[in-house]
Amino acid sequence: MSTLLEKHIVELLQERNEKAISLLYDNYADTLYGVAYKVVKDEDLAQDVVQESFVKIWKKSDSYDSTKAKLFTWLFRITRNTAIDKLRSINTKSDKEIQMDVSDVYNLGEQSIRPEFIDVKKNLGRLEPKYRIVLEALFFEGMTQQEASDELDIPLGTIKSRLKIGLREMRKIYGTIALLLALNLMV
Image 1 (cartoon, rainbow, N blue to C red):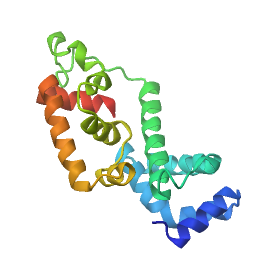
Image 2: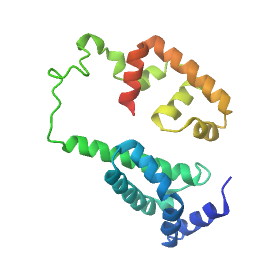
Image 3: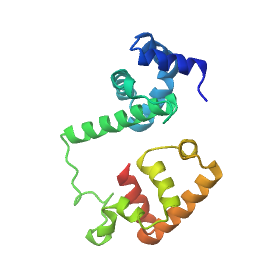
């Protein structure tokens, strides 16, 4: 359920009224900074992410649909995706090259990389739809369990059960360590 403040902010956004950005900043900037910092793990970078996120929020204000997501969920996703994009951008611009043959941190060997690790989404298709939908919401769409519960209109306890069963089924395909690696590569 939206608060009066959220409804007011949404109305201002739809009217392209600049007061919306000020209200968003006053009420959400600290939380969104926390989201950005959790991803980038650097204070200055997190501040940059928040600034870029607010620009995107302003530019995309006409795309917000309150029937699809709560205002905070929409803001959260934009900020999280901006932070991930920022990290990717920095990693591709990095002058340093990781030398896998020198480092033993990720020395998995060719035998441990099996073709089925390449396409996790394809292997999700092996699961019953009720488990696949939950895993996709949590891992591919970046939702929290509570957000998935709200979005999919499924009780939180059922989300948790389906996650547990879905991961158990995926573990049968990948094995425990490989499943964790595959899921980390997705995010």
